[in-house]
Amino acid sequence: MNIKQLSETLINQIAAGEVIERPASAAKELIENAIDAGATRIEVATAGGGKTLLRVIDNGCGMGPEDLALAIRRHCTSKLNDSLFDIRSLGFRGEALPSIGSVAKLTITSRPAGADSGAEIAVFGGKVGDVRPAAANPGTTVEVRDLFFATPARLKFMKTEKAEAGAITEIVKRMAIAFPAIRFVLSGTDRSTLEFPGTGDDHLARIAQILGADFKDNAIELDAEREDVRLSGFAGVPTFNRGNSAHQYAFVNGRPVQDKQILSAIRGAYAETIPQGRYPVAVLSLTLDPALVDVNVHPAKSDVRFRDPALVRGLIVGAIRQSLQREGDRAATTGAGGMLRAFRPGYSPQPAQAWSPANSPSRPFHGAAPSFSGGFTGAAAPAAHGFAEAAQVAFDSLSMPTTRSEPIPSPVPQGASVEAIANYPLGAARAQVHANYIVAQTEDGLVIVDQHAAHERLVFEQMRKALSGRRLPSQGLLIPDIVDLPEEDCDRLMVHAASLEQLGLAIERFGPGAIAVRETPAMLGEMDASQLVRDLADEIAEWDTADRLSAKLEHVAATMACHGSVRSGRRLRVEEMNALLRQMEQTPGSGQCNHGRPTYVELKLSDIERLFGRS
Image (cartoon, rainbow, N blue to C red; front, side):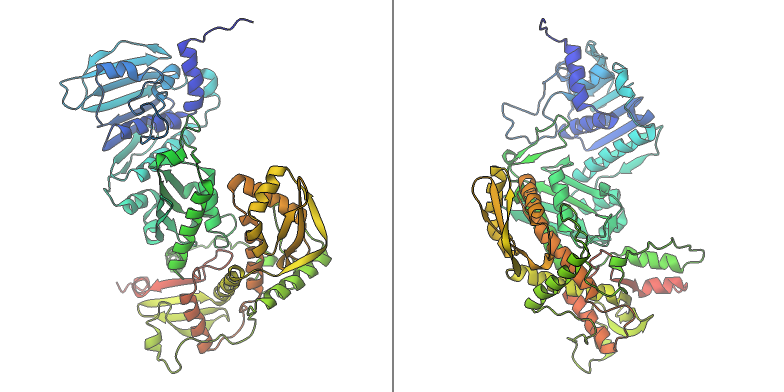
């Protein structure tokens, strides 16, 4: 077998297979070039979902004839010197334009600022034409026609024109969020024109252009720093959530990324506050020394690798949770909008989603064990009874209140007038309707509270505080459970042994390649300790964290809080209703229950007057 040198065209087509996966990939590369060129206005036009036409026009610095000739050659770039450790531009590989030119009909027209005329170069399926003079405005116009005509097999893997056009729209949105000062215009025969005017330094205004005006009213600002890694951006309140993760945006040193570590950290930060199957809305921007992050992981540059991923994860989770606590009982403003729509003539509500028996507030707590995923094998009926007893013993030892029918202590001074109490954020209780909903009057409107959901959250937060305040009760195993693991997994687990012991899991080395489990958390009752240890080892190997156990314990606490809170159907005195409202105001996250549903809806007086045509 003889070895031979591949042709330049074939080399570029191979590179195009990694860099240019679809029209949206080409759009991303061209927009990044425009931003690196200092453009303040970028126009993108498409036809046929970008397969027939993709045109990007910018008012950046432009290129002269000599630069044009180099721009379509592989590994020619103006953004990189001799090191990959200090990358401060979006592009740096020098592969995008030659890759596009090898599989499409590419034309680049450019004129530097101050030049009398422009120049143009064309590349058709890898064949490079001569540079020639051309009329052009200052800046650069890149036109890509018949993408993948030179590699027809690739066209078979393209999605519909509508889907490809939508992917380009998503790319433009991500770039627009990352660079709010730049004006973006997206148009073409396959879409209606979409324009995002520049907002200067007002990042939230630009985000509202992309995610909608509601996000501005339901966003919590983030600003945190840890060991020279800075996190900024905005996170939505838990009750402002979506049906998928498409509304989560992450940026590293201004570069839009889709990094699984960051998405996992967002998910962890909202644990026990978002309903299952729903996703928070968040826009996060990480700024750190370029030497601490590798952006050269993949030719598409959408993945990054942090030198200290645990630090980044901890920063994100901690910053979001602290911000949610800072906002206290804040709930989404969209609840009021839904209520107003329900009052309007002709409103037809969607059928309510049936609650599962385990989540039904009217179901008494019989000690059924929660269903765990990730290796917590389903315990049989006898084990369920054991779980209930173990959990109750654990929380009795923590002196936790299991308020079922006891009066709620009131922090409101006796004899306080309704007018004085109405000055509180959640106002003064005026009535209880259907034995479950508290109607309170505020200074400028009214609030409707779901008493069971609200008290459930209060009890859960008390339990969560107790979980983090001391070593959790554990149950010793008569015969230690010996778990065989690779040596490197054993080493990782022992690094976190002290933290796991605080959660009631006592482990120690048992010779080479083995871990001995001597105690397990009492809250979990009978369980598969071996599978838990293996799951923890896998998690530590991937994320360098052992959060899985604490998440399981919080799940148990959430279940107990649901069944240990004020029930639907219980009549409350006015003093008890006011006490519940005051405790909500003092408790972080009380705007939603443990299942992520809102605990209250607020209507302003102006909204009520609008319903009756008084404004």
